[in-house]
Image 1 (tube, helix red, strand yellow):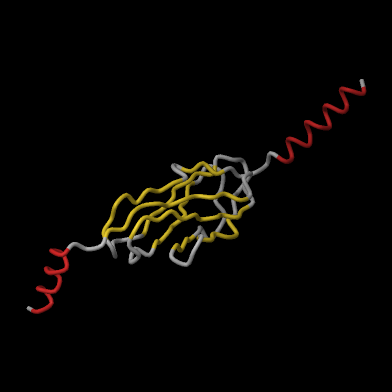
Image 2: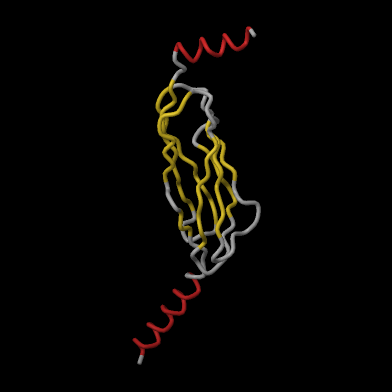
Length: 136
């Protein structure tokens, strides 16, 4: 009889704590691939709240100043989808790998998502075409 009461109490606690929003991202990593310097650095992480409570993202922080995330303004209700926008400054040449840390009330209180890719310098031909067009 005592075991039954203890087990019921533990189950009741699990039920209360399971009332959380749950992130389900289409992908945790966005690969920009190889792109040209100064190309469009805007991308979006799409997710759905597959939990049973609203998700409120209180903070979205990039790992450096070159990575600027944006988060939904209000709660993301169960079953709803939303996006975390990210803008990477593509003026820097070379490979990159950056993180965006999300703080929320979801089951995973802190969630880290990533971007990566490689920025190529303009070729001599591209540079010549740009300057030729400026003279006209």
